[in-house]
Amino acid sequence: MIILYLYNIGDIGITKNRIEVDAIKSHHIKEDWLVVKDTTKSMSVLVFYPEDLSSYTLSIYINRPGLSFGYKFRYGGGGDSIDKSYIEEFQTRGIDDRAFVSINKHYVSNVKIDDGTQIKNIDINSKAPFVIILPRNCGMVTFYDLFGKQIEIKKREF
Image 1: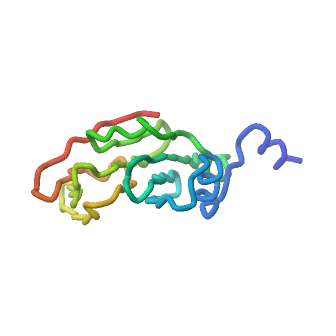
Image 2 (image 1 turned 120 degrees about the vertical axis):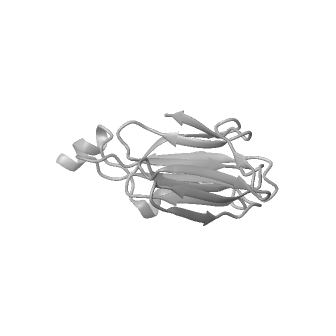
């Protein structure tokens, strides 16, 4: 009875291994589309796209701490849900993670994370969209294109 009540008021979401299936079904994703995604204990971000990058669909799921069971869809869509001019940084209140998302029209190839004591480098496929979820307190995050040029980040609260 308690589980049914929690489900009805929206406190029961889906399990981590069902997020992609839920997003495909909810957004009517075509079978031949590719996906890039990242998931932590509190956030899951997926970008679906065709091979020619002519379109895309973004899905963000949140798993809130406390009396909340599973991930729940929180934000997404296609068209202009990701600004192609920037790398989008998505954050939401109450979640300690932040997601960096790009269709990668700037050919981003590297991200540097500087926590004040060390610098961590992560290589990125410059020919494909990407999603990276990092803790809010990880330090300074900087993205670079193939030529070493810094790419601007646009923050978005949802």
